Amino acid sequence: MLLARRLSRDRTLPIKLYSRDFYLIFNTCTSSLFCIMGVIVLPSNLRVGLQTLLFFGACLAVFVHQLRTQTPFLRLDYAGFTVGYSKSEQYQVPWPQVEGFKVVRQQGMKRVGWRYQPAYRREVQGTHEHDIDEMLPAAYGVNPRELAKLMNELNRCYRMTAEYLNPP
Image (cartoon, rainbow, N blue to C red; front, side, top):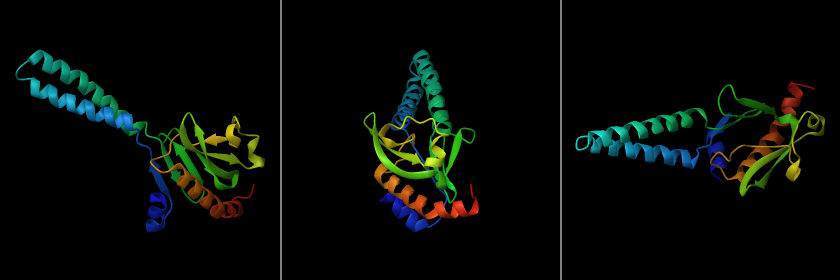
């Protein structure tokens, strides 16, 4: 519902969604607290304060770096959707190549998977488990059922436009 409200409010594509890993955020906050504790302990016990500050400061730097660079994103636009982790690690799937999206359960988590059109399936090295070819790496903070519904709607709306503009 949240994504549909955002789309109806903005009425613009592209939409870019990010996934925030709970454990990464939790570890960042915990390291920050321990760094503050190290600063508080520093005047009374220099050695313990410095060790705490150095260790948890290094952990904090690693977690902040991971939050900035290793956050998966999903970009939905008129041409298709793009999945990636950074500008160098991304791939785009045009709407005409996709047959449909559906929610699948893998390792106890619900995710959105898709099936390619028959003309494009031979290029894909998927496992065809759950009758899908590929899956999104995350839910991007959105209900997977709602995300699959939105992506099916965008696929239905823009598949013909993309086929018309870029014939096979």
